[in-house]
Structures are given as C-alpha cells and as structure tokens.
Image 1 (cartoon, rainbow, N blue to C red):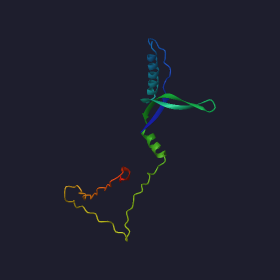
Image 2 (tube, rainbow, N blue to C red; image 1 turned 180 degrees about the horizontal axis):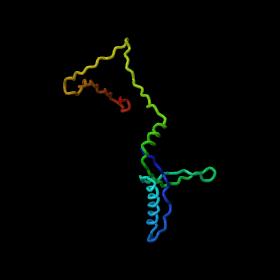
Image 3 (tube, one colour; image 1 turned 30 degrees about the horizontal axis):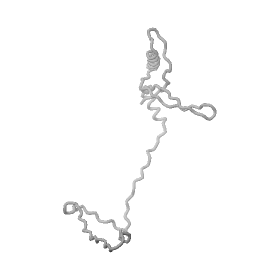
Image 4 (tube, rainbow, N blue to C red; image 1 turned 60 degrees about the vertical axis):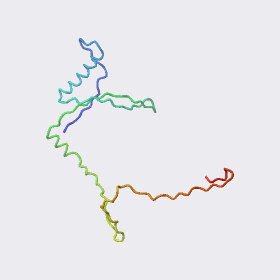
Length: 144
C-alpha cells in the first residue's frame, strides 16, 4: 500500500552559476524540489496540470491552471495493517437477480431446437396486383 503527496511545482527558476537560460533555471528548481522530497523517502510519479476555480471580486470567478507534482512512498507493513483496520468496512452493493416464476394458469411456450428445412429464405406468396382501370376523358378524372 502507498501514501501519496501532491505539491505545487515551482513557478520560477532558480539562479545558479553556469545557468543562462530560463529553461535551465526552471529545470534546476524542479530538480531540487524532487530531490528534497526523495531524501524524505518520496518517489516522484508524475506532474499534472489541473484547473483551479478561484473567486474574483464579489461574484466572479476565474479558472487558473496549476501544475502539481505527485509523489508516493510505501507504507510500513504495521501502519498499512492499522490503516486497513481503521477504515470502515463497506458492504458490496446488493445485486438484485430476476426471479423466474411460472404462473400455473399460464404455460410457457414450447421451445424447439429443430432446424428448419430449406435454404433459409422465406418464400413470399405472389401478390395479385390489379391494374388500375382508366376511363377515357380528362386527366383530372383518372385515379392516381
């Protein structure tokens, strides 16, 4: 079992001898933050960028994106056992299974496993179509 620690990533670089670019200074700041926590037994996992909604004025709000560094370390075996004992036990959700019952008055239809004969294509009965009868005369009087 592990415990996790999340800390904000540095936002400014650290000046040091030989570092000229902002990228190198920023990398040094991140490196020092990771090494400081590693000395305490924390293992660096990843960095995440997450939204943070903050109030602005009386009724407004803005979303700021925050970079966080995630660390973890293994719990000692005895503290892991205590942690599990202290946690409340949650029963798994009950799953309702359908119950099939047959009413004595209604019989279930018989199921047949017989394979039908033929090529599996249903034959439709031929339609008897009657041609419309047209009368001589005006087009408006013809049936549609």
